[in-house]
Image (cartoon, rainbow, N blue to C red; front, top):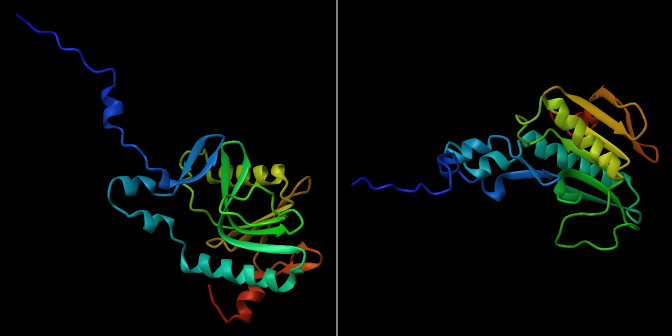
Length: 206
């Protein structure tokens, strides 16, 4: 007599599908995860999480250089400079990582062990660690993140692209600019940033 066996409800596809660990999530938009670049290589064992989460030496140096410059130029009684992938919760089930965030002290009464929920005044982003394959093209990610930040209350967003040596400067309801590193970019209150001059002063070639 033939015996009928009942397959579990779980499909073969879902059985084979490998669960993606939360630590491989880079950012979140409306509950939809944006993973770290090369997260799939971690799942396959080709890379470790640390390999895909780490910054290049140039990215790390630019972060320290710009943050130090801003801290030197800004009024410390009014502004606070935060750096190093600051988590910013800008909407429900949504958060982005920020490389450098300039915050107004009057709006940020205290620092807590949680993500930032007050919009920074100025944000700096140096490249990205996001996996961009889910987007139609890389520009879609950069544009969407920039617009989300501006819509949330951030006044200015500056992208630094190390490969192209370009700056992308965005303000709400103003034309967005793409300029070279040697451009005198006004950040705030007559404070200008010329990335090439900063690097030359440090005698660093990139």
